[in-house]
Image (cartoon, rainbow, N blue to C red; front, side):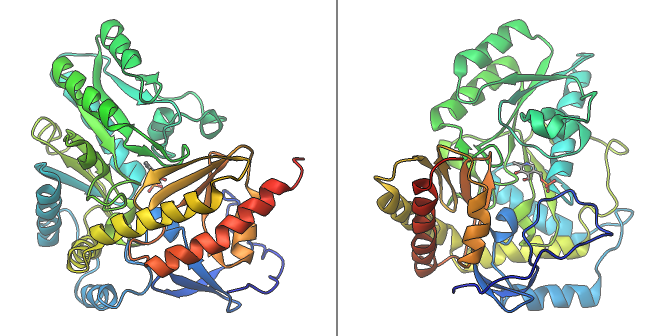
Length: 404
Ligand SMILES: Cc1ncc(COP(=O)(O)O)c(C=O)c1O
């Protein structure tokens, strides 16, 4: 698994440089392994940032998508799309919610949620509806979703931001109760069940239940952004299900199409009919290829009992990291659930990204100090053990070096 030396970063003069990229390109994958164009192999601890639910080139997904491509990739929302109804019904069945709007990405799903919250307010006669959002939240990079995001770096340079958001700290019930007393125009509370980009910060079960109660008491919509933590990633279909609650609005994307872009906003009865004809739409949303990817992803997840796999392999991965990093000075906390784990260090650790790739492991660093693991949900126990074996010595070496 040792990666030989890489060539210098290839320049991409015609591609806008909006990402800090590692200097290699992936060419193909199988299961939880990927290979770069130079033939080096990597264990995929990133899953395309929580996207490749079924890993790479899954033997059941590939022929299903080939079949769909051969029939119809895109039609139009001018016509009925039977696969939309099939995927929507499945998502409603799994979540207990009632209706779905389809789009293509996470930020689009969140834009739709924001529009629902505002229209919900207008329909009640609230002229300037407000939405409660969170410190360290991440909801996307459109102007509205970056305004809802709780990260000044992501917002810098893009003002004026969209108004109508009230920000509170996570897991702080009194702060939310104070908003209820002081902001009569609030119509919704919008949070990630586990903050992903913000550093793998879970909302506690008690907090989620308290927010649900407060939303009911206030007539607010509870909107749970499960773009990253949903679709089985924590070992239940949706992360909020660990708290035994239901949201009114649930944006999904990332893992839903196992790599094919699919976004969805799943709504319960209070929100399902807020948007009507002409209120919202998108050209690509719900196209037959995307819908088939969603339908097949869920079918294969059920067939292969991937929720159970996530729970057992995720627990083994976390236990392995906890065991190997137990007495390592500089490791602040290991957090998360299922196959959404974060290791917080006491210092910025961006360097670990390249070192891990050199050692044959893909992962990401988020919130500067948190090593994030969001591998495919098919990860095996052996692969989890390999992640531990590659990553923990790297962390120890990194922390042992003097701070710059
Ligand atoms: C919780 C959450 N919401 C929204 C988004 C935005 O999704 P997309 O990048 O598909 O627009 C992300 C992406 O990381 C996310 O983690």
